[in-house]
Length: 98
Length: 256
Image (cartoon, rainbow over all chains, first blue to last red; front, side, top):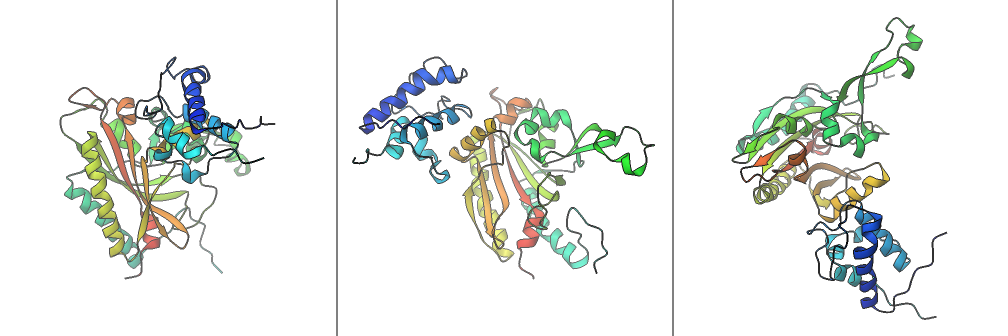
């Protein structure tokens, strides 16, 4: 069973979680990512080579777990993924009212 | 009753064949305008070449192998069973361009280079639909090697030329960002990167359902690194290929 999604209260909190995931967790999951890539919200994730063909799978997995939603194929375009800021802008949604 | 034996690809003759050749001639003339080297390659390709190109790991489900018989004296009922087949080391070419990179191996490109070839290609497709999806099909490719900006300019020109050729044949398509049908779950990331970076663009027509008749594939330094294709600067050369599924063009073209 998948763990329930984590509801980030703000876009900034979601972006911070993404930053931590890429800088701290991704190097452990995928050793080709250099140890602490030190990405910021504006770092171009593909142009700088931080995200490769294996890392993208981990990244998408993280986003889907964090949002509780699958990413539809039509949203897999560079404008939504080029940086942490772009990912947060595209995929974070406010938690629904109880 | 149709007594013709089954075929893995359409059989053409006379007017239909002439029409098919006329379609290919347009791509060939375009390649000649670009001063491409014209090459003819065999249908079989060395297994090691495809392995260096990482084709078997990306598309194992499409591979087709040429085999011989372990014991040719077996009775006919046992002759072609798996236990009596042995791989020859040769695979059936899944695309034309895989022959080009080893041909250029070790080259330092002082200026960009283009090659074109047409060949019969083979992919182990689950279904056979003439003019759409075939085990055996004919492909024309124009293969480019050079710096990024030069490839960008050629790719833009290619799009215009493909649209013009299809309009002349009475059909129109749209450009779509595509993903290759990578097989292994670990290769899904390659497909996602391909989609994100828009390295593969397909020209898709309605025939009557969507059908890709041409593709423009940018490889970046992938083949340059694997086949030692270098620029004068020492950097790996970038490559790209423009591929035309000739059977699909023939089935999409309106009758003259």
